[in-house]
Length: 230
Image (cartoon, rainbow, N blue to C red; front, side, top):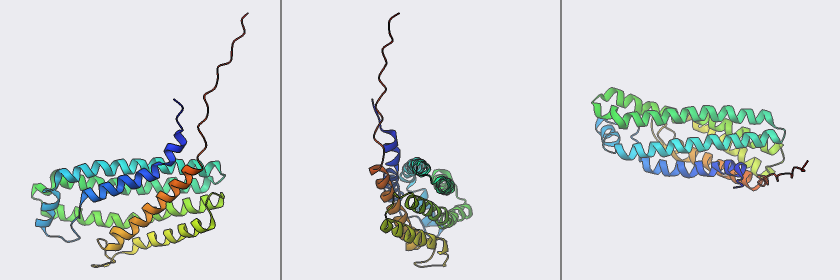
């Protein structure tokens, strides 16, 4: 079977967005910073099965993100923009590490910690996960910057899409400043929870689509050459 693996790898950005949205919706409304012990136990222990299912989907989303960035890096290297490709790889590694820390913390809380009665540890890990979400803004912005600048310099992105990418870098980077104690600009506020992730998902989806449209066609299998008889 002649499979266009390059095209499939480039589609993983769209797959990442789909997995992420499903997992985010399934995970539910995580308790905010400083939530009471009752709310924490009700969420993590009461919805244990749902959270663990969402954990698996989140992990699949991160794997698709890694494959997408590998395809992005390959496209940049082929276009003579290896430096930007290396920056994208480094940014995705850092972003993936933060995502896996978030996945581990959520799974550990739901699997055992929240139901163990250790209220201080449960509260501390829940607050820690919100801090990780804010910190994730920095490698996410670097990934968007590397992809946007590299593809634009390679002539793959138009000036309009490049300008949108620069705006996305700034808006996602602003997510790293959401340190208010409460409200819209808090770690558990609307900007950090919804606006910044939506911008990042939209950029990945668009870039994945651009790369898919420019994917090379599948190579035909080589024909066997007839061996002349002696």
